[in-house]
Length: 192
Ligand SMILES: C[S@@+](CC[C@H](N)C(=O)[O-])C[C@H]1O[C@@H](n2cnc3c(N)ncnc32)[C@H](O)[C@@H]1O
Image 1 (cartoon, rainbow, N blue to C red):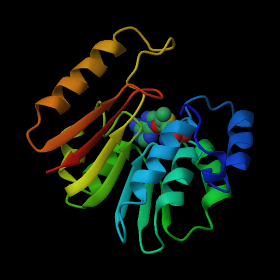
Image 2 (image 1 turned 90 degrees about the horizontal axis):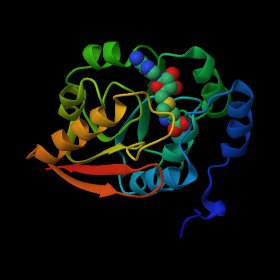
Image 3 (image 1 turned 180 degrees about the horizontal axis):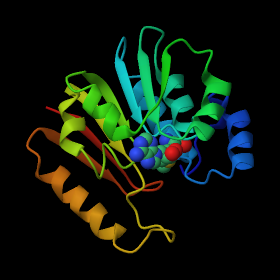
């Protein structure tokens, strides 16, 4: 139960992981999280997906692996060094639009745009501009976040931010949420 089925791994994953290691990127999503993203993505047919925080494209690859051919994914990161790795391995997939921009700027610029699935894996969309991000989620859409269980490398005060975020999400009347004490700690929310 603690190991995802390796035959489910996205095709590009092994080569992305090799480049991720070489680039010294240490914030990559783990396979359990990826398998959940892929599973949830597969439930949304012909849908619009948003990822905030592409990194080197690991979670992007998992989301794309679950999406059908009529769906599209916008993935945003402000660091071209990491985005280049995602582009190298996933750039041929016409369903993907990679954007190099500050997450906050992107959210402001695209206010009113709507999505069926949002994976928020950076500051914006999670600890910053949460309301603006949730405004972009259709009813019935998924909002997913990870890294909610304590990590040894968290800076002082981060635990309080996480508690505040969880309290805020629990208090919202327009979300049904599941807290998962699994992988790095996830919340899956559905907008109602
Ligand atoms: C946790 S990592 C993303 C990991 C990736 N989703 C994965 O699963 O492998 C967070 C990412 O957010 C990006 N980031 C940090 N601050 C940002 C900002 N203000 N705007 C856009 N991206 C940002 C970092 O460059 C980093 O790639």
